[in-house]
Length: 399
Image (cartoon, rainbow, N blue to C red; front, side, top):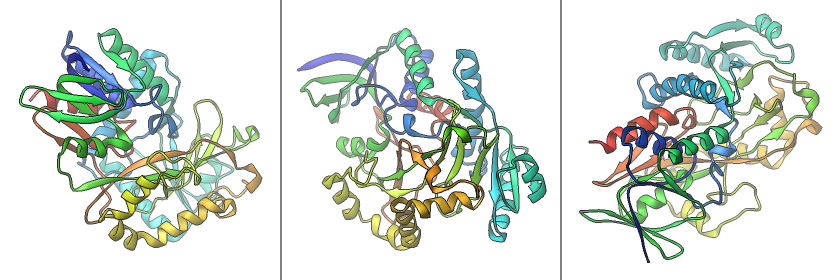
């Protein structure tokens, strides 16, 4: 069954798809745009299951797309929230070193922050304790730019603006095939319909590489899903910290470690860890998809990755299965939190692109053809960076 013809079809109604649709219509008013989302509502996965942090760009290699997009995204996200009356709090972030090795790595982060145009403040143990009485450490850096917000609310507002500009959106619409001809892109849906468009944009997040494969395009990476498990602290701890509290991350891994996050609703969460999920959208150990597991294990990039990081992987599994082990990660810098303080909270799954040689992709990766553009890897801070990424994507389509 043949459906309508569009100028652009956007797959995915997370924050990136919403930002791209809105910016495309700002640049091309009057064009016909359709956003299709396989879930029944927007922002159901990575966008709606993160910690709501608006990152400042501390960790990223100077000159990388990550660093550039993050710095631009920070200011644009703050401005958008203020203009649209979306909840926002620029509370700042403390990155805390708890031993001598972490302090050496913290010094490198301090320099990188400066290289990325930030103005971090170095704190010794006494200054840290005066700033945050509940936090213990040898040293810390304060990054005042970091903020918290509600990315689901931002996504909904971006979609509202896109729809007001003429876009259509369909939920519960899952793509089953993509076929590109010299004149158009044909998108088949699971309900039997076939949609036609001049161009297609893939912002499918955890499923992005499957759409690339569906179209028959070649890539040297695959997405592996890593579950991040969070806990919520009791309400009595809502005023425990004034800032976001982060550990010093392992520079070899793309994860930032278990941190204390002030949420925009006033609560405080702990997390996330990073354990390989047993399904692309597997938010617990009991959510198992045999096809997804087989895809992970049969991917030739998985095994060199596993050989390189098996110790870290086993450690993450231990932290996941035993709350007492997870607690130790928090007590390194906040000793007063006890095991009974770790209350249930929603988990998330991160889409991590891994090359065939087992390399973790740390920067954005785009795959394109004449009429399609696929956001193959949009790692954290993709939510922070959604608006500058949208500009880059729409500019690429204009070439």
